[in-house]
Image (cartoon, rainbow, N blue to C red; front, top):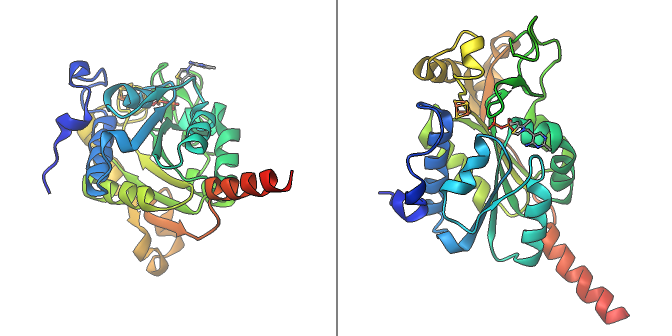
Length: 272
Ligand SMILES: Cc1ncc(C[n+]2csc(CCOP(=O)(O)OP(=O)(O)O)c2C)c(N)n1
Ligand code: SF4
């Protein structure tokens, strides 16, 4: 399939402000490809993002966008989806945006199983503000806010999503555009809360301090850390240490919130 990126982009905003080689460029490409694959046009969807380098996604994709305060993408997305259940609501958020300041919204969005696709660009850091450590920064990493190394263990975004009730959970990376497009496409097709974690390179503010200062090398490192979900059964546990398991990690059926809400409103109006 050929992809007409210009149709989806705000071409007057190009080139992007992202650093050269930033993984977010590939993520933007994958989102446009997945929307094209699903036949979702600019007006069929809304892209909502928070504040952060990942937050710029809503400035660049021309798609009924909302650029919301840091950590607050999901309340906006929930309101929008409730008022326009016919639209695809796609949230693009950073690991800080969705796991730190927006962590509570993340949990309750997954719990409701509202039909939103949440794409979390996990670059292990607060990229925009200079590389402070985030809830997904690996332990023993260096950051300006951890001059002696980080002590805290990292959150597993996909485990958090599953435990909170998201009915589609997948992980991919910017190192494999085809796989990433496929995971986003499956998330878009799923009816319910879908969470797609995307391991991305911030070589500038994370990699530079943690032995991966160049984009190609950091992308290769990400690639080498990936293990496909299909093969983990046959691997010894120690081979999974420090690896990102990629693929569809869980898919379940459960009533979707906007459909439940419509029925609920009808029932209440009928009874009162
Ligand atoms: C309420 C509030 N607190 C803090 C900030 C400052 N701030 C802006 S972006 C950001 C972190 C961005 O990190 P992440 O969400 O991981 O996105 P990335 O830049 O890595 O894509 C912070 C702390 C803010 N804008 N608003
Ligand atoms: S600071 Fe990091 S996340 Fe932000 S644009 Fe640069 S490489 Fe990408």
